[in-house]
Image (cartoon, rainbow, N blue to C red):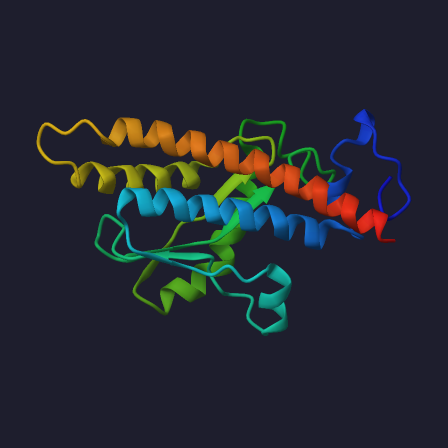
Length: 201
């Protein structure tokens, strides 16, 4: 049973993703897991980066809505730094359900929202923005795939001639598996935190 009193069953399995009584802390927990996963694959690619692990609530308390989750130094094809914001969207949420009827519809909507949010931020700085968005059931948004592809290219550049470890192709496969696992671990964190909050009610 949720903190709000709703009994969670197979019929409303995604309740914890949208319940206003638990979602802030529960989704922060998932966000942290996925962000750490992104940091892991970035380090494996040999890309220098800086990540902001502050929770959403902490960022809002600081008065800044525009604090990217990550900055990849020189990752863009132009040589510019690339900044990103990690986000997972729930395609079965009532507010997004009509978009989710098309493939990756929910992810594309969230990507568009993030791009609009950071448009002025990157325009005022020598930066490029690319959202790291996935749907909560595991589908990667197009921009997320672009980041993984860019990391894969950098991983491939590090390989000595004749080397077999982490070519662009197998890095992409490995990174996709790591991120997929991170999303599922993050979903487990949503449930764990929501249940903890419910028990403490």
